[in-house]
Image (cartoon, rainbow, N blue to C red):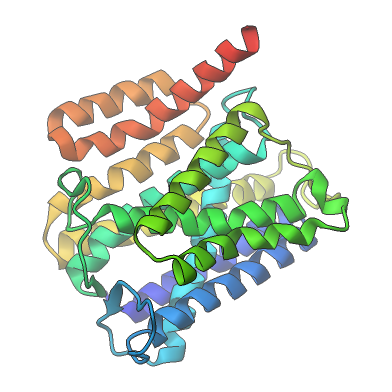
Length: 338
């Protein structure tokens, strides 16, 4: 399977997600979300692909693409991937927080789980991409490297996590919260620029890590103390009742996720011939299970603990999603009763 095949699957998935967003969230949110995600993805990937050519860049990209496709196609391909990943993470996280009355309909818990879904998606994609040769890293982060498979390292996962937060946080606050009716809401655009400025003017090592830890601390504090409710713009719902079309639209995110998993499994087993890489799919699969309301959380956690026992330390990552959800829900319920 080539990058061109991957582009075809990603484009089909993106079209399906646009359809889902249009019918479930309305024209305004659909237009604003995919327009801004396109702009953000293009800005990031233009720098990524131009980095190797501009050797005088102060902070060149930490990885290089090894494919020989035209620059415009490569930038567009990865941008579509970001658009798809952003919206999928929103949909899956939204379903996960619906399990808890204390998390349901809240912005910051949704942000937290969306970031973790993106990190899980990063793990699955990075393990395949590195081993098939789509790109390679020019450095290796040794932190927790022994707990991941396929040569994936923690920096890749954290980079996807914080890039998702830096897009979804201002978007949710500007378009989907009570602040959307204020005149000063554009101040939230400063959120993604704070990380960029930190790296440009202070450095990309300890200053970047300090900024990321601070961001995570603030997010967790808001999740617990002020989760903030979603406040969507009103729109006329076009699919009402329990029709077949409505049910089909509802499962579109899962169809797209199935396409992604099927492609990665095919490459890992058929092309790379390394079934060990399938371990990288476990965390993403667990998040999908968590988003399915009919599967009890405790059953999911029990299943992931068995995975951890079977696969050892490389199976621990599969245990984290369910445990984090249970711990957060229990903590908030305990806080509510006090």
